[in-house]
Amino acid sequence: MKILVINCGSTTLKYQLIDSDTEAVYAKGLCERIGIADGDIKYDSSKTGEKKELKIDMPDHGVAFKAVIDILLDPEDGAVKSLEEIDAVGHRVVHGGEYFNSSVLIDDEVIEKIKACSDLAPLHNPANLLGIDACSKLMPGVPQCAVFDTAFHQTMPEKAYIYGIPFSYYEKYKIRKYGFHGTSHSYVSKKAAEILGKPIEDTKIIVCHLGGGASITAVDGGKSVDTSMGFTPLDGLIMGTRSGSIDPAVLQYIADKESLNVDELLTMLNKKSGVQGLSGLSSDFRDIDAGIAEGNARAKLAFDAFCYGAVKIIGSYIAAMNGVDMIAFTAGIGENDSKVRAAILKNFSYIGLEVDEEVNSATHGKEAMISTADSKVKSYVIPTNEELAIARDTARLVEK
Image 1 (tube, helix red, strand yellow):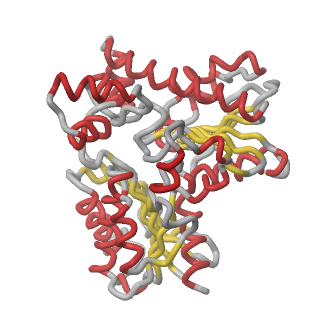
Image 2 (cartoon, rainbow, N blue to C red; image 1 turned 90 degrees about the vertical axis):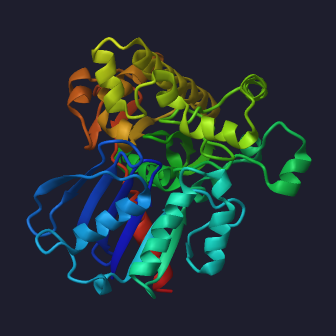
C-alpha cells in the first residue's frame, strides 16, 4: 500500500510517500518558510536519488501542497505517474481536544471536530485542514487518516495536566494541559530506548522537539508524564512566533495600553511574538545565528532567552522524574543547530553530561551521540520520523 503522509507545521510541510508493507520511502521532501519570504522546497528525486531544491514563494500551506503534488507527478523526478497510485493519505493533526485520543479515519464528522479545535491551535489545525481539503479534491475517494499530536500525552497524570483554576472549568470545558508534538515525542523516545539498549519501561528520557514550534517532554518508562505545551501549542517555550508561557496579567495590561481585544491579543501572542518578536529580525534560527554573527544584540537576546527557557524546563523534568538517562534533540532546530544544543547542554555538567564539541558542531540532521563517551547522562541528536509513525497508523486503520 502506498501512503502519502502530509505533516504540516506552522511554517513547514514535510511529506513522504511510503510503502506500508516494506516501509520503503518512494519520495520525500520538505517545504520551508511557508508564510515567510524566500520559500524553499528540498526534495529527493524519486528517479535518481539526487537532492534537489526549488525556490518558490509559498504564502500558505495550500500553495505548498500543490507544489508537492506537482513534484510527485513530475516526469523526471516524480514517484507516481498518476495520483490513482496513492492508496491512502495520513495527516498529522495537531489538536484533537477531548474528541480524539487516538488516530481515526477522516469523515465529515471528524473534519467538523478538527475545525472545532482550530481556535486551540490557530497556526496548525487550519493548515492541517487545508491539506485534507486539497487531498479530497485531488484524490476523491482515497481514504485519509488523522493522527493527533495530543494522543501520546494522554498518559500524563492529573497533577501534571490540571491548571490551578476553579476545577469546574475542567469539568465543564475540559480546560487542561494537552501537550503536542506527540507523534514525534513517541517516535524519538522509542528510538532513544533502542540506542540505550534498555527496555523502554526502564528508561527516563527527555525529548526536546525544537523547531518553529517547540516542546519538551518527560518520558518515564515510555509514557509522557509531563510536557511543556499546554491547552494550546502557545504554552511553554519561547518559539518562532509564539510567546510561550507568560504572566496572564500582562495581557490585560497590554490590552488596556494598546486598546486590543482578545482576538488581537491572541494574534500577537501566536504570530508576532517569540523569537520573531524579540529579535525583530526573523522566526528562523538560521537568520538569528547570522544576525548574532553580525553583532545584532536583539538576535542574541532571542537566542539566549530561547535556550534559557529550555534549560529551565529540562531541569524541572529531571527533578520530576528523579533522574534522566538521555536528553534527546530533534526537529529542525534540535537536529541542525549545534549552537542551540551546546548553549542548552552546558548547564547540565552537574549531572555528569559533557558535550563533545567536535561531534556536536559537525552534527546536522543525522543521528549522533553529542555527549562525551564517559558522560553519565547521554545526549543524542535523533532525527524524528513522524511520517513513518503516521504511515503505520494509517495502514492499520485502512486495513481494518
